[in-house]
Image (cartoon, helix red, strand yellow):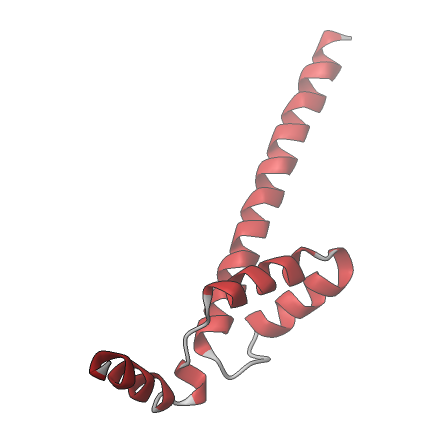
Length: 89
C-alpha cells in the first residue's frame, strides 16, 4: 500500500508539460489523427507546438513522419507500376 501511495505522489508532482500519456490516451490520439481532414489539421497543430505536453508533441511528430514515409512509398510504388504499365504498351 505504501508503494501505491508513493507512485501517486510521484505522478502528481510532475509538471503539466512532462505528464505521461496513458495507453488509452495514445489510442485516442491515434483514432483522432486517423480522421481524414480534421485529424490532419490537429496532427499539424500538435506537431508544430499547439500543445505544451512534450509527450503529445513528440507522438504527433512521429505520427506525422510515419505518414510522410507512407506517402513517399506510395508515390514510389505507384510511379513504378505506372512506368511498368507504360513500358508494356
